[in-house]
Length: 549
Ligand SMILES: NC(=O)c1ccc[n+]([C@@H]2O[C@H](COP(=O)([O-])OP(=O)(O)OC[C@H]3O[C@@H](n4cnc5c(N)ncnc54)[C@H](O)[C@@H]3O)[C@@H](O)[C@H]2O)c1
Ligand SMILES: O=C(O)C[C@H](O)C(=O)O
Ligand SMILES: [Mg+2]
Image (cartoon, rainbow, N blue to C red; front, side, top):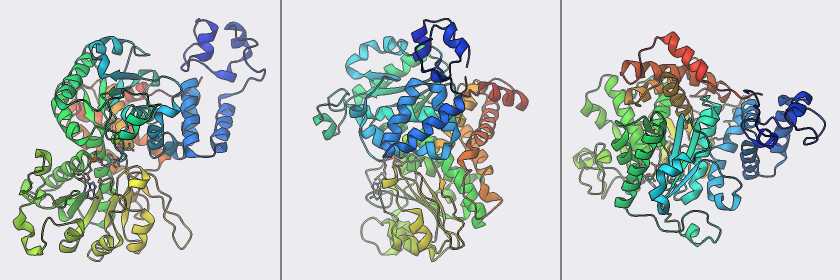
């Protein structure tokens, strides 16, 4: 930690970026006027970490563990990140998916301390002033949400703030972004969640969501204010509802350094995991029929990257498209439907393609799996249990190594449980999930972890890359470089029984590799200053913040 400075003693003791709590030494206590303000014993950071983990484990529920860790973050950031770093696999589900979903649902009741910015529509005339009120001047990464599509649990209004806060914790833990240079933002444009509108303790703007015209004007004013105040910042869009997510990305991606995590981050992690899976299955994506359940911004984003990959593997654009099948709540996307956005229409099949299936109405997922030899089944539908035993068994009867990724979050929204998929396929399926699941049990006693195919493998590394390389845009090629670098780190490439994605214990090293690949691509694409690999590596190293006193 940089010097505790010469601020007033209360500042040093209570400033979460500067405090050491009981680890202030006897000399520091005297120097900063802290004598008598702390219990006598001086502890080490390691002892503090041990004590905190004891308290985490002592809590009765994961939600209480989440509350404990979040309040630790508000008290002492160095200790908070040291605690997370000491046990990443245990910490991740507590500060992130799935527990963060409960934190968002209970946000108003759990309110403790301010963090980040709440930009509410009624205050729209003051956006620049509100941005200037941010806690720290220099910001590398903003994560912003409007709370409308939080994980798979819908509109959480102001409670959506839990997501930017959680994502930014991982930008720091995994991507090494200095926590004092991160900024979570909640655009409070109302909520259509009736329970929240009726909740007397709801802390957001108690109003239905504003209409689209006002909404887009507000987003534009927000982006303009960000450009004025923090022109070099990375602006990550998170958990926007599908009708807003892709249009916002399209509008701003060529104007500033920005990306949508649910569209692009998810696509990159899915493609990374598919690289390991296809390798183990001894095939290529281009040789498979790929089926996606869910045509929201996440599902379409993934299919767009899958399609590009098939083209890279040698297919003509139309051949690639013909191998991609997307099914939504109504059924297969077909070109005679009048309810599709342009992004969805790009994956619509001609009804003639399926005419001989003899299905009346739109084919369902079960029909698709019955009539095609499906090698890859992906889920971003929010539909719990939609990968039924019948569907999975039908698929698995036709391929040796079915690739099945139920990617919806949180845990309760997953399209299938890995243990079930494993049983239905006699252990042949290659599985990855969006939320964490227990390892698969094997007869000979050796448990196999289930890969968590979550965009957390991607966004911290992208943040590290663009900060280190001083990039000005996030290009598609940069996201695909991230996917490739992640895929190259798949343990399954060297051991076909290993998980498809790296273990959490390795995730920071893998983030460095991904960051290098992304930064290199930024240079090639002309959106970052010229730099050699050695220079980029050095920049990544020096950008990385690590906790410690
Ligand atoms: N693993 C990850 O990293 C990751 C990343 C982003 C999003 N997600 C998850 O993806 C899910 C979807 O996100 P989104 O923004 O695209 O949501 P969305 O609500 O916009 O889209 C959901 C899609 O699924 C379809 N659908 C809903 N119920 C269905 C059903 N019963 N059968 C078939 N289709 C159904 C809808 O028609 C829609 O096309 C969420 O659960 C989210 O948590 C996971
Ligand atoms: O937040 C996550 O766990 C992943 C993803 O961004 C989602 O919206 O589900
Ligand atoms: Mg998300």
